[in-house]
Image 1 (cartoon, helix red, strand yellow):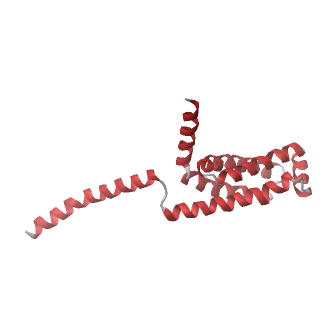
Image 2 (spheres, one colour):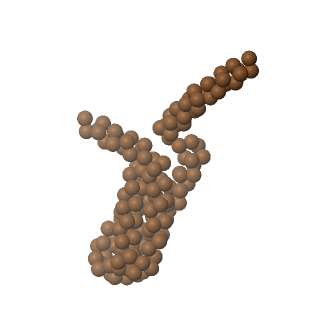
Image 3 (cartoon, one colour):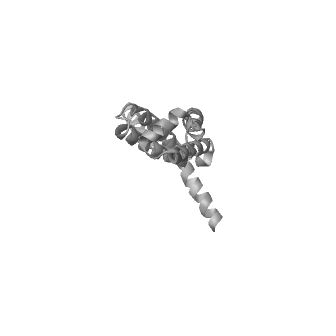
Length: 160
């Protein structure tokens, strides 16, 4: 009899693990859990502050350090203001839930440009900085990817 009981228990294990896997898949589709949401939301706020205050502001006010760097790049002031504006827009969008995923992707694009610029114009002096920000933005983009679908649905709904 104990053999029958153990085979019954063993037979119920695969179905229990299948049910567990199904619930994990459903939870992943629904969104991040509370701790993950809070951690990524905090990361979004820190990144937004960095991009708005430390990165965009010096460009938008024409600070001499930013102007010298962009003169060295060779595009002049218009490009400095463009990049600063894009960074500020990305920073604001990072904290707006429906825009957070697409904002992270757009800022990742800027980080690719910054990395290439660091390698080609500045001899790789600070090339690791955009790589680090790219990785942090990738975390936000992955966790907030369902917001991209919500944004597309919102835009399509307004067009119809």
